[in-house]
Image 1 (cartoon, rainbow, N blue to C red):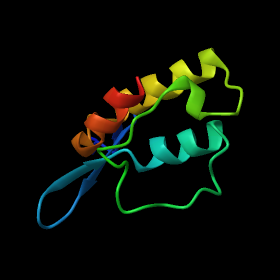
Image 2 (image 1 turned 180 degrees about the vertical axis):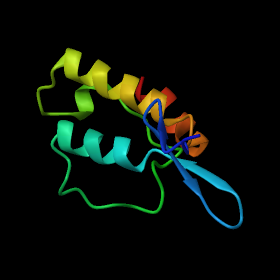
Image 3 (image 1 turned 30 degrees about the horizontal axis):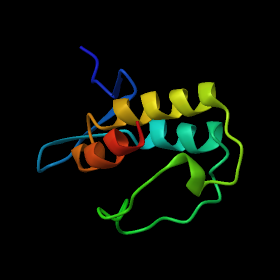
Length: 91
């Protein structure tokens, strides 16, 4: 019988304590796909009092790419439920 390492882009790690699941490889692929490999990490994902609107951005964006990013982040919330608020706000 073979050990499970990846399932639906979810990495399965066995330790002495138990089984851990994560999307590490999936996240790295997302960063590469959307050109964010050089971004800096932050301890909090988003200020809860921040109000987003279309006029606040001066950059043009591609709607299809934005939808792909939101869909990818939605899938990521399987192992990162702390991102639910952020993803729902952006969607």
